[in-house]
Amino acid sequence: MADRSFGMLWAMLDAFLLRLSNRLKRVLRTMRLIRFFLVVGVLAVLGSAIVGLLWPRWFPVAYAVGTVFLVIPLILLAGLVALPLRARSVVRLIDQGYPANAKELAIRAVARKLHDESIETEELLVDTALNEGRKLMRRFRDDDLARAVARDETGRSDPDLGP
Image 1 (tube, rainbow, N blue to C red):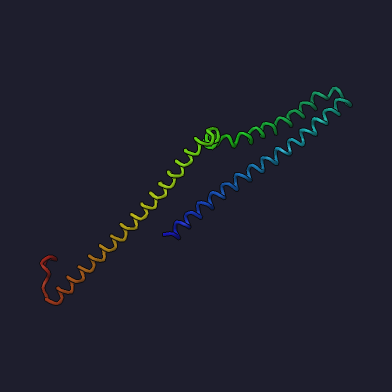
Image 2 (image 1 turned 90 degrees about the horizontal axis):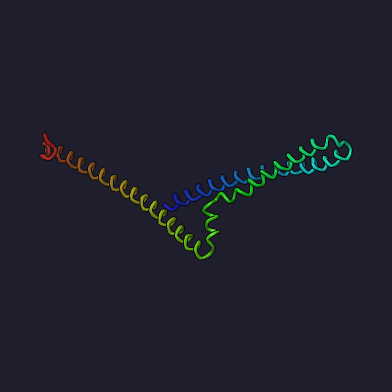
């Protein structure tokens, strides 16, 4: 029983770590893309200044390109900053502060413990039912075998079994 729950715990931990790893890889790719756009944006803005000095009539186009390449990473950065805020339950616990959130965390821990114990109890009930079913089947087989032996020894049928 302990080996099975350890295996289930390990599988849950493994699945959690895999999801976390995939999420972090996605964030890392996004940050690399943002870095690329920021570098290009800064170079475009600097280039627009040079274009403004050398070719003044092309300055609006160069400035527009530089602005677009700076706005795109800012939008992506705003999205990255907003990601942690989507975890509403965590944000709410932080907003509540220490005394209030400690009480809620304790309630959550107790609820989780009761849920886990309930699952263990259900598993034990299923195991008990299976074992009792096996015992009953063995008892029926032993009774049938005893009646068959008694019938063979006496040559007549048992009244409980019929003709």
